Amino acid sequence: MNIRIAEGDIAERVRSIVAGLRSLEGPLLPILHEIQDAFGYVPQAALPVIADELNISRAEVHGVVTFYHDYRDHPAGRHVLRLCRAEACQSMGGAALAERIKALLGIDFHQTTPDGSVTLEPVYCLGLCACAPSAMFDGEVYGRLDDELAAELVEEARR
Ligand code: FES
Image 1 (tube, rainbow, N blue to C red):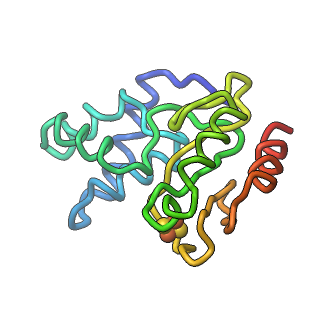
Image 2 (cartoon, rainbow, N blue to C red):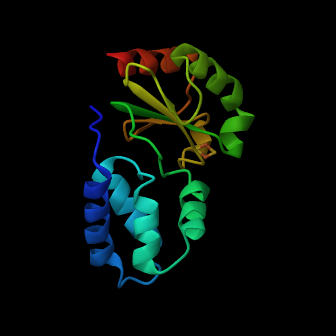
């Protein structure tokens, strides 16, 4: 369930997260992780607050958020399906399989189905290269992904 959070509440929560982590060396990544854990994504409204608090530019914060594929800019669906887009998986048919999964779900990467059931995300190596192509479904990894297993995961995600 996605709950709309007021910008003021976001700012207050973000300030408190920054306060707890700012003394770390290189605090930006841990702060972004904590924010994503807290909200399920990194709200746009959090970026200027982080920049002000860390005394860095908004462009710098925005650059880091968009560089790392782990950060979402919108709330995720009830399930998250991550497909590996790195080389070993691509060489084992991962790209074509990803196209078929996108068609099954009716969404592209970084999107959530309109019923809020599934978010599809790319991931760059799950450490399962020997069992390529690989995927992660709600934190659990799956190797040797084929059409049959992909259809099962999509069906489970839709429940
Ligand atoms: S390249 Fe896909 S798991 Fe390593």
